[in-house]
Image (tube, rainbow, N blue to C red):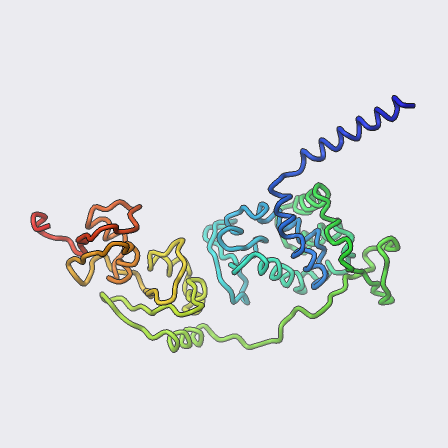
Length: 339
């Protein structure tokens, strides 16, 4: 008998070891960081926390993907015709596809829930929140992803990390479509006959959106145009970002950033936002820098491209700050001996 129990214990330890090897520490940390947000989506919108978390893990590579890091987009959400928020361009199935950009990742979770409340995914809510397999297959059937193995990948993540237990004790219930009565988890015999409780209507009241022309006109009422070195610009105000400025001007954010040498740079109050590409020569022949002045600030002030200043002065691209007073040429000097 002792030998039998010893073998059982040995098998159990081996199984536990194998199970532990299947889990990824980065994934576990991500789950710990975002589990409360995922559960809140189930409470507020009736979307299983297990599905939300599995999709977030899969789509964002546990928060490590470019979209998750740069755009706070944890679900691979692309732009749609009604999207009014920030945008981020990223190569996916085609080059420079438009993806939604968020202020923080929690906003991404909420927008994902609102997205699944569209009529296209209505049939998902015929399935109990406890039935993660049913949800995984139905979301794929409704067209969320083109990967034929998408459902199986979600299920594997849920079962590997026990995501089906995230909402335990959260008070989320299922109700019968036929009677409206609460259905205990153990009593759910036909899961297709239940829907998840939604605590409130997540759809905001309809407000007629501004046309692109109206949005642009309003922008220039708030941001008077200026001009220097033949290029028009406006000054950034509180709350402006390259993303929302590009949206209001109806231009690509990347184009606006490139016109301002601003790839990877945030916008600050008072910064110049050039509305067209800057020039390759300046209005003045040269300027004197002051210690602590940045290359970017100088080029914005003079309305000239950083690349042009670097070539005119033989400066390396990684020079970003002037530590001493320097003479910087903004135009090509015919007689180099005059330098």
